[in-house]
Amino acid sequence: MNEAKERKTDSELALLAPVPLVHLLSALQVQEWVAFGSMAFEVFDKLDKQRSDCHVDAYIYASLHDGSNVSRYWRATYIGMSEWDRELSKHRPASTANETGWGIFWKVKNLREVSESECRINEMKGFGKSTKYKKFFIPEGPILIQHP
Image (cartoon, rainbow, N blue to C red; front, side, top):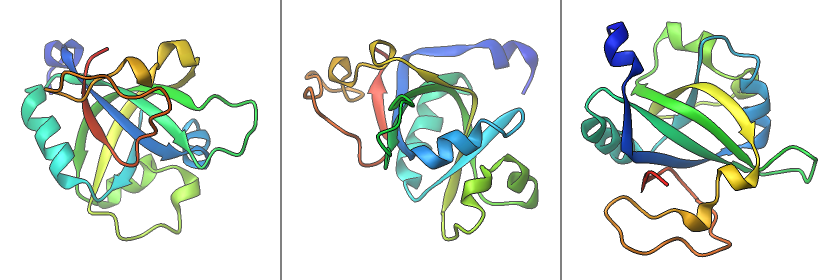
């Protein structure tokens, strides 16, 4: 990917996805970009077709939260998906060392914890949908959303 394309961002499309808190915390130790596993090939395939090589904002909900002072809300920049290869292993959180069986891996950079005001799920709408999610909506898998 050339540098000019790397700077482009899709301003209409975004990703909302849950990731276990333990993996988010572990992912902060990964250099450059991090890869999370998923079986939602169709969602990421559609995302990659819609984004036209642009980067996309990712809103991440920390699932399996332990009630600590760590935020339930995270942001990152989605940069693509891939199948497993050896190179990918250095971009996986250490907490995922014993995980197997993922169909694809979605990659993000600039992962960071944010306040709830920067990730208001009840202000978000599914991509191509007209109604917002309910106040206490919790994503159970990755979803394409209209950029908030």
